[in-house]
Amino acid sequence: MKPTVTYPCGNCSQGLERPLDGSAPAACPQCHTEQAFHPEAIVHGAVTRCPICGLKVLFTQKDFRQAIGCVVVLIAAVLAPFTMYLSLVAAAIIDFVLYQIAGTVVICYSMTCRSHVRGVPAGASVQPFDLSIHDYYRSVARKAAAGEQPEDPEDESAEI
Ligand SMILES: [Zn+2]
Ligand SMILES: [Zn+2]
Image (tube, rainbow, N blue to C red; front, side, top):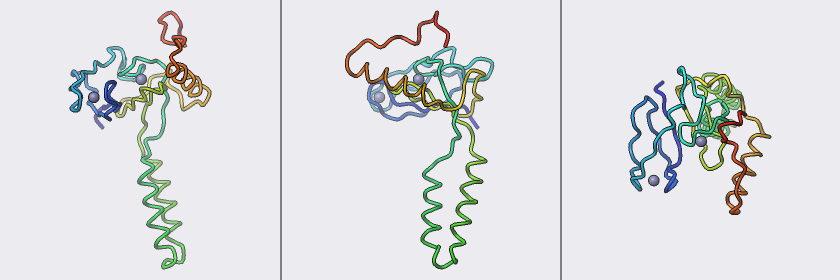
């Protein structure tokens, strides 16, 4: 799997997907804004920072496309009366297998960024999703939206 990052364009919020192979990313096709990737995003072949906003606080998640799981269940539900409901059992098994084979995605906690990095292993500091960290960044985003100066968690001297 090739390393990629998906993120909303910082200017027009258009969803973009770019290879994360050290090459300079192409400009946004909609507004032509150029997005530079953070040079220290990948260290020793692992993600340690968000390539888009440089945030060091990231989490990992199974890259399970929920939409596929929903379609499987929907088809199974339609077929259920004709299969003595065995289709629902089959759907549960298919969903389970899909989940198991799903890769891992590394996601930025920043509410405005939410970049998704695929195809690169997570760095040692990257943990599974933590609701308290998520709440913290949500409050930061709310304060920023209200025009207040958020405390800067990205201060270089403050290691999180
Ligand atoms: Zn754009
Ligand atoms: Zn980010």
